[in-house]
Image (tube, rainbow, N blue to C red):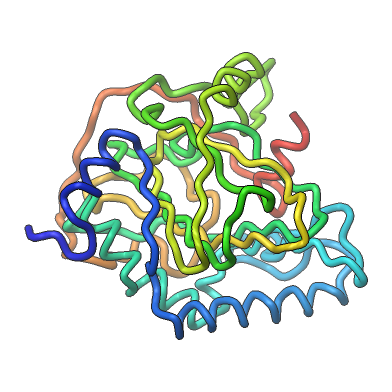
Length: 288
């Protein structure tokens, strides 16, 4: 199959490092609409005192940080925005970003889940070191997390930090002392931090990340927002081995290619993840 949106050097870089950042993953019109939609949700959140809305599994759709107030909103997560926004659904289904993912793990590509992670100015939200695969194990690891930069991502506003090449290393446990923490052990996190590389880009860029790549991020220390629209895709022959942690009405939809009607398996071991009970996995990490 010919490549649709990436060149061979970019594909090779992704395979070697487990991460690739590409600009202009959506049109300027799509980007403007994504930004306007999220800005509307931030304004709506000013009238709320706790996480609110209802996703398809009954958990809150809009997750508010504990510091949230009308004067200083701290909307940090929107679960499955594709269910409540035409533009987020459009981008998840049909954009240059989807073509890029198909170039990496296609040609047959399945939507798995989506969310928005935002760090508004002055908020405390951080993401502890982890890999995505232990949250969403599949029969094979051909999954890509596409982190679309709705805002420009800079050194100061809490950029994604990754360990290039860690996707070919071990799968690290997120369970400690009998509790699912959503984060790797402290000694492993310290090692990752020493080897971390930050991912930057202008608004409209996408960071394409292998499901087994180690990553985390620090709080936003700037006065500029850092909002990521995150969509996870799986090769269509990768079967989910645990419940979807962010279910939506698009679960399992083929967004590129066709339904292969087969399952491809690779040998690995991973502990069964704990399904999130609150609005987001941030609560699991905060409890660790």
